[in-house]
Amino acid sequence: MSTKKIINTNKDGSIILTKTFRPDRVQKRLINYLYKTIMNSKHASSYNKTYTTQIYDLKLIATKIVCFLHICSNWRSLGFGWENIYAHFQKWKKWGVIESTYMELCDRYKTKRLGCYLRVNMTDTTIITNKNGIDKIKRNPLVKNKNCTKMINIVDDKGVSLFVNFCSGSKNDCKCLLKFLDDYLSKNIGIVTFLADSGFYTKDILDLLKSHNVKALIAKNVRNCKKYRTLDKKGKKKKLTYFEKIERQLEDMTKRERNQFKQRGKIENLYANYKQIKRFALRYDRYVINLYLLSLLYFSEQFLKHL
Image 1 (cartoon, one colour):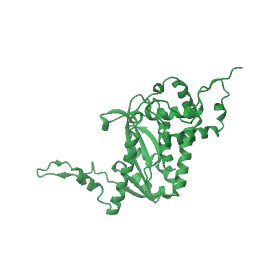
Image 2 (spheres, one colour):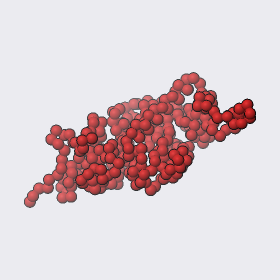
Image 3 (tube, one colour):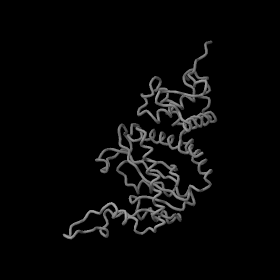
Image 4 (cartoon, rainbow, N blue to C red):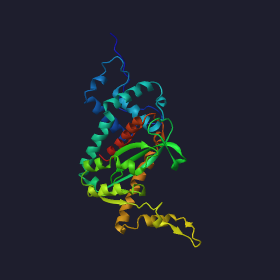
């Protein structure tokens, strides 16, 4: 009986898929973590090289998925055998492998910081322009009325994402947050300060944070408030300058609170790095669940940088 040949990694343990992608130290740790997670689960029998349909080694499959995450916009870009890799990704989605990996790494990160991640939490949204998606897609006037998806994150004082969610592009920022904020605050008891921009300045959010004894540092929304309209000498509406607008948004904060509010730039940096990957700047995924899982893989790498 002839033995089946399975495509494995190189003898030295390195895997080179393309000239443009070689896994770095963090990516190799993520690949090994995915490998151990599956081999220690009840699904290990699917990759123990006994099935005649198995072509690739499990570590090679994980590497190709990480490669796809960073340099490919569609699955066909992986070249020969892309259908096989996509089928394995769908299996992992069904088994909940990626979600469990993200949650385990998140718990390890929180344990290492010994509650320090609770000092400051901040939130913001970003818009992902749609390319091929069919669900959670709506038009947003802020991006020339194009179809888009909205992503919302909660990060700690180091800029590490602790919560990720997606909603339709036309949904208001405060409604996106209210949907899960109560549950998040209940699970993370002891958060001291919560930072957000003026899009989250609503009575519901302020009351919810107050009920959980969390200090809210949220910029005032002065866009449509009559109290903050200014008139020129002729009695016409005068457009506020950038610095006047910032001053009125932060007028109730002390100097110390204003310096603390500057930490909100860390979530902006998170989104800037996130969108350096082409497939996250534009939504190529047909279903939002695929975009969600790939985003969890990306943020899992951020946890491994601090572990």
